[in-house]
Length: 173
Image (tube, one colour):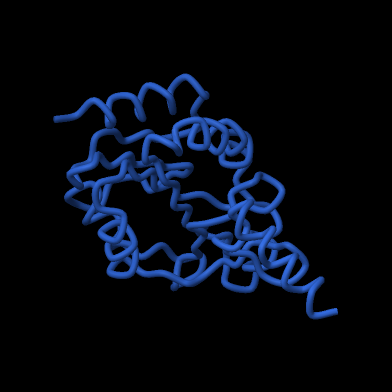
């Protein structure tokens, strides 16, 4: 039995499955985050291009763009592109958000707004320099390797829009 467990753990390490942030039943673990915590998450990825996506399970454009956003991020992952997602769902819907993320293949960088359905305005003060007139979602920010905001994508996006924003951030000097 111990040999089987050891072999399974070794295989997970080889496949890179040990780094995935999944909870019980294969659902993605979704952790609470506020603006200060999100800044720390971005800072921990210094030297990488970071995509930050604000979304919710109840938002049709958010759900529609998710497969293309995840696929595009994975296409550029080897070039140092990470994805952080922050759902604006109520805290009671954390498991629902984790299930959706798992279905989409977004296995790491999953967060829920610490305040639940009421957005932490600190996110937008940081990312937009002020609180925007409209906090519509989906809302995506692409941060270049030096920590500068390279692109702001408001509303549902296509794979081409995500790819253009990632390429712009990767090319930034």
